[in-house]
Amino acid sequence: MKTATDQHGENVKAVLLVGGLGTRLRTIVPSMPKPLAAVGDRSFLELLVRQLRYQGIRSLVMCTGYLGDKIENEFGDGKSWGVTIEYSKELSPLGTAGAVKLARSYLEEAPEFLVMNGDSFLEADFSELIRFHRQHGGLISMAVLRVGNAARYGTVQIGAEGRVTGFSEKTGDEAPGIVNAGVYVFDRSVLEHIPEGPTSLERDVFPRVLDRGVYAMEQRGMFIDIGTPEDYARAQQLRDRLYETALRQQECLGAEGG
Image (cartoon, rainbow, N blue to C red; front, side, top):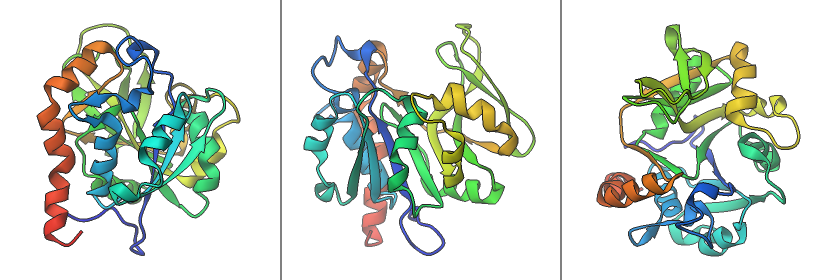
């Protein structure tokens, strides 16, 4: 497997959004941030870190907020996981876009960077997504999934050549649809389109920059989030498959000396 590096062989940075309040999961994990919720004997966030590491992405920025000190205590500088981790700490909730904006000082040398939600796991080839982004030359590229029941998600409308033409808010209808999988590649100039203060990528930023080029790459692998008690229980049931998927790249890269 190829590593997710840029054309000069330098590591592409990944920004992990791990600062949410996790209110819907609070009854299950009342004393820790949602990304530290255990799946078997590992935290959910550890699976994401390992997935990134074994696909060659070893420079991470964690955007922390609620109980962020616990995440920092758990992962430190990342050395134990074979990565380097920096922390962008919000003092009050900033939303997904506000958190990315706050982290801009860690991204000054990054012409593009990966962004991931810290409460969802997508089976994806990050190198392919980065390559897709470069080929299309847009401001944002997003991973999307075709699901049989899009009731709890907003849906994404896609036109020619994978260009996103619009977004629909979730309606509760149990109908098929294409949904945002919470993994993106951003051109650094996207920071210019994020206002200061609390802001949402999904509601405030993406719809406003469609004319600047937002593209979607469809994925067909496993996707799971742990945003609700029901989905967290499902993650436990899929624990072995999650482990296998996150660590599969470890075996592949290990054979290549990665």
